[in-house]
Image (cartoon, rainbow, N blue to C red; front, side):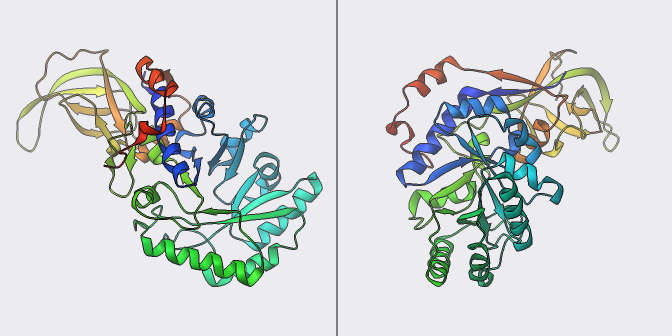
Length: 355
């Protein structure tokens, strides 16, 4: 049966490296858990690093964690039927609609709570958010709401439009924040400057007012999301997919008549994004997939047998879809060598990141 291999030691190490990087610049790291479906074992491991506030885009991932010692930000606007559960479960949410914020205020009042929000600004990603010239109006409308605490402004990059942030973006974002604070007299405690795509800029530029980054993909995949290239100081194989060979048979390429040896493994289009799978340490080729099976060209290597397993690395969508599948077993691993490094982790351990 196909399974996910989740190396908790490597996840912890990546978290420690990233936390050190951001702490040096006085920026808070908020791990984004949507690609791992807010896996509780992963959260517990991140707690060892001192991380206790997390973000996800799906409320159903967070409601089972309501009674833990962690706090959560909901990244995506929720449905009206979820507003009460949102206030009960999440310390904070990112919002873009005044009508929704007013409803959350009423619900928070009925529960005797005060709900924190950040306003998402549509900068250059084009997915969601308030237009900059509406920000002052929004802030003035929100401030009188007694059960809403407007703590900050959030920006986003490279989720819909693949345009990386620049130094000019940072400077203009600061201008917007300063102008809105001046116009409203309200100080924003949190300026959430974006996601993993902001990390390369962090290494050579001052991020000015930004004091939080929401990091998910780089944490779990160890890559620079602006280039999709692995970062030398981070692990890229924190989570891998292992599939079992169900059949090995000779086949013929219909176009050329060439013979080849084909294996079928127990993963398919219903389980993951198959075009984001890449065999690890196997000189084989993925031919394609159907709903439940993945076909491989073994390149004439006849030592494979039915029952052997093939390991695959996972792109972001492939990882997320796999983690959403309840039928895929999760095998949690630890590495003694990496555990020793984690125990003795110091500032020097992350020098040279992003070389």
